[in-house]
Amino acid sequence: MIYLDGKWTEDSQAKISVLDLSVLRGFAIFDFLRTYGKKPFRLDDHIDRFLNSARLMGMTPIYSKEKIIKIVKEGIEKSGFAHTNIKLIQTGGVSPDGFTPAEEQTFFIYFYEAHDYPQEIYTDGVALKTARLMRQNPLVKTINYAASIVDVQKAKKSGAVDILHTDCNGNIYEGTRSNFFAIKNNVLITAEDGILKGITRKAIIEIAQELAIPVAYRLISTSELSTMDEAFVSNSSQEVVPVVKIDEIKIGEGTVGLMTQKLIRLFKMKTVTVV
Image (cartoon, rainbow, N blue to C red):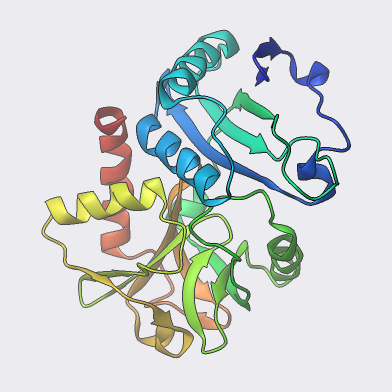
């Protein structure tokens, strides 16, 4: 089910122009969230981030926050899934010169069924690769993932599931579609600047604070990885995913650590109450 420019339509019937700036230049912003049952996870936070992305890109939000909330709740009911993925997108529209955003831009929300990920990624952990690649504007959630897609395909050929973005000095910022955390001496470490601040990341930090787990906001260098006890990534679809290997470096014992297990468990418990 898709809500496109003021109308509800089926997936197969939804169309935008080939002259839209999202097609010609990759110019569009989006946000993604899921529901647990019929309850959207932190809907206010996601819409706030979406509207902020629009402003930072010089785009005027087409709908107010209140209107988007109304559409999202209606779409959840119309879709009828047990759990629903929701993607909000605003594009530059059909540009008058093929470069400048149009006055009438395109807005749509895509509702599709959410599925559970294989349980082994949580019990066994995953491997990641680092890539010297930085977002153009990490504060904005844009649809432009071209460079990341290329590097992720390379990483998958070596057995990794995703990449971690690093700068020329080997500092780790975030994953392609996730935030990165490491744990050392029972301190939770995550970058604060130069990243897209995930909503799931925010929830994890709140849980850590409730448990009196110290949180250190700083970059982690690839040269430090061998000294870390645990690591994981977080995002809206997969929640908390343990990382047991980065490049050729084993994290901790190469198994899912105790603190990561606790955060996985508590996040799942609290999703019902924090939506």
